[in-house]
Image 1 (tube, rainbow, N blue to C red):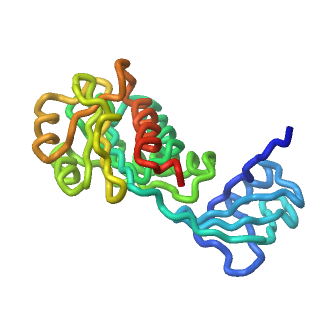
Image 2: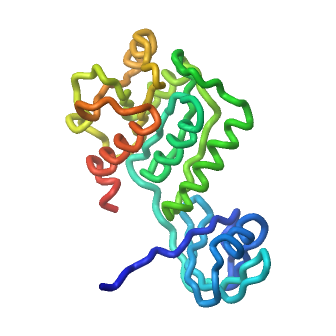
Length: 245
C-alpha cells in the first residue's frame, strides 16, 4: 500500500521570491542536525500567514540547508474564524492547551486571567512561551497559518471581546444546550471561552452572558481545562464546515 507522507514544514519570516531558498539560524540548525534532511528530500516552507512554498533540498551544511523552490500556494484562512479565550492553567498544562488548540485549528488565542486561575501570568516570558508553543505546534500540524497569541485579558476585557464577536460560546459543565445544537455562523468570528480548572464563577458567567455569550456543553463528560479546547475545536471544525475546505 502506498504511504503518502506530508513534507515537513519550516517557517520563514518571508518566503523567497525566486527559486532558491536557504534555511539557516535555529530553523536551519534544526533541519540539518535534528531532522537530518538529505538532498532530494521534499519540504514545505511557510510564512505563517497562509503562504506556502514546495521545495527540494539541494544541499546540506552544518547548520544550513540549501533549497530549490518548485511550487507555491496561498492557503485561505478558515471561515468562520475561531478565537479561543483560554483561562490560565497551572504547570505545563497552559502550553498543552495552546499546543492542542493549534493542532486542532484555532485561528487566534487570548490568555484569560479568570478569577479561579491558580496560575499567574509570567509577563513577557509567559507570552513568549505561548507564542513559541503555537509556532512549534503549527509546524508539527503542517499549518499554513500560525495563530497569534494576544496579551492576557481580564474578565471585563473578555466581555468586550464577546460583545464584538459574531458568536460567543462559553464551555460550561452546567449548560443545558449542547454545542451541536447551536446555530453557528458560516462567516465572521466565533469566540470560544474555556475556563480554568476551578471553573467559571457565577459572576463571570453572568458578565459574559450579559455581553452576548451562550453557555454550551460538549457532552456528558467533564473535560480538563487544557483538553476541552481540542474537543470543542474538533466539533466546530465538523459543524461549521471548516474541515471541508
